[in-house]
Length: 219
Image (cartoon, rainbow, N blue to C red; front, side):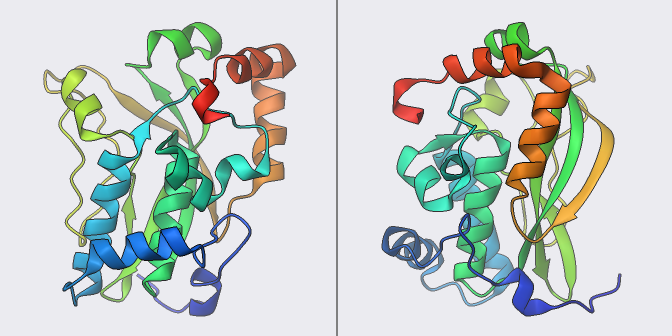
C-alpha cells in the first residue's frame, strides 16, 4: 500500500475536528496514559468512542456543529458520522493521522423507528482510516458493544492492526450490513456535500421527520 501522503493534512485541526478543546484533549491523555505504541493508543481511543459514545441515530444532524467532535463528546451519543468525527479528532490529538471513508450501506437490522422514517438504506455511512505502522487501517466505531450483543452480531473489535468494519452478517449468518456504494474518502467532514446528498436521496419531508425524531438532549 502506498504510504506517501501529506501527513500534516491528516493531523490538522478543523472546525469539525476541534481537538484543542480542553475536555477532548484531557480525555485523549487519560485514555492513552502509559500507552507508548500508536496502535495501542488508537485501540484505546476506538473502544472509548465505540462503547462509551452511544450509537443514536435520533440526533440533530442538519447543522455543522452536529458533527463537531467536542459537541459529540459532550452529548455522549451520535450516529456514524459524528462518532467518526470524534474518533478522528482524538487520534489527531495524539499525533496519529486520521481520515474518513464514506459508503452507502443497507442495514438489514436497522432500528425500527429510523427504518420507518428512512428505510434501511443509509447514504454516507462514515468510518475512519487510521495510519498505523506505515499503512492505513480502517475502523468503524459506529455501534457500541451493547447494541451488537442485543442484535446478536459479533462486535467489530479493533486491534490497531487489522480493519474493523461493520460485519456483513449476524452470528447466525443472516445479513447485517451491506456496503453498496463507495463514496470515497476525505481528510475532513464534507458537510455541504453530505447535506446535499441527504436532501436528494431522502427528500425534505423525510429529513424533517428524521430531525423531529431527535431527542431533546441531542439537539
